[in-house]
Image 1 (cartoon, rainbow, N blue to C red):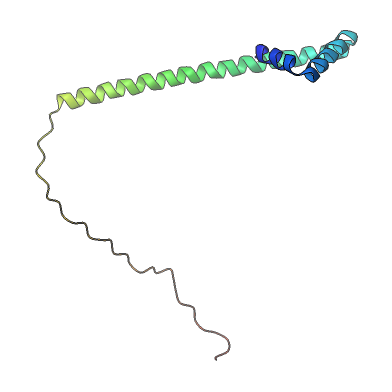
Image 2 (image 1 turned 120 degrees about the horizontal axis):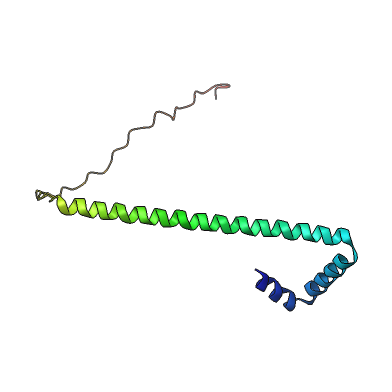
Length: 116
């Protein structure tokens, strides 16, 4: 993260000047320095939380993968232990097109008003 920030600052002179002004203000004012210190602490806490979430997600994915592998092994073992009976030959019959019933939802409207 820092490497990208440094590269971004070096590519853009405006960001470099802004960073220098912020550092200058932080050295001149206790309040600005304290504010930047609080922002840095917040940023570090946020990064640690994101890293913890990523590790938890990776652990959950590994557990899910392990469970899937175990299930596949169990299915293969069950399939190997249980022989399948031979299936009778099937006769191909043409499939009839589906016949749809008339919808009961559509009701013709009654004529009201003037009669022509």
